[in-house]
Image 1 (cartoon, rainbow, N blue to C red):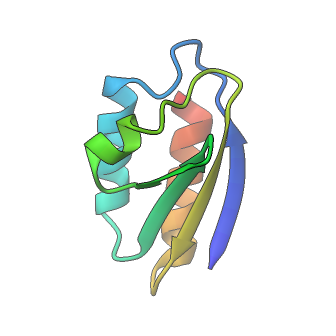
Image 2 (image 1 turned 180 degrees about the horizontal axis):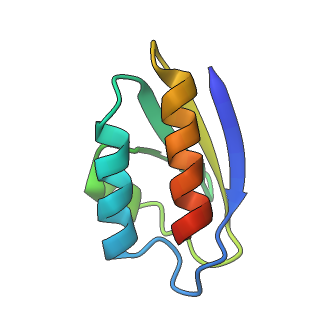
Length: 85
């Protein structure tokens, strides 16, 4: 299992557009990808779940990736966070 923490810098937090793109990135991998923030967890492959986190600017999201392609999945998700959120 791979994990990393990321603090949201986007002033709008994880809103609809980046959430949709984040789900697309996550769905490209077989690994199970979960986000945790504010005591809630979300399946990274489900838009409503990701939006339900309510992650805003300065909130820290913990990303957990587990599966046969976890290394690549973790790198792709972390890259997306750094470039978009």
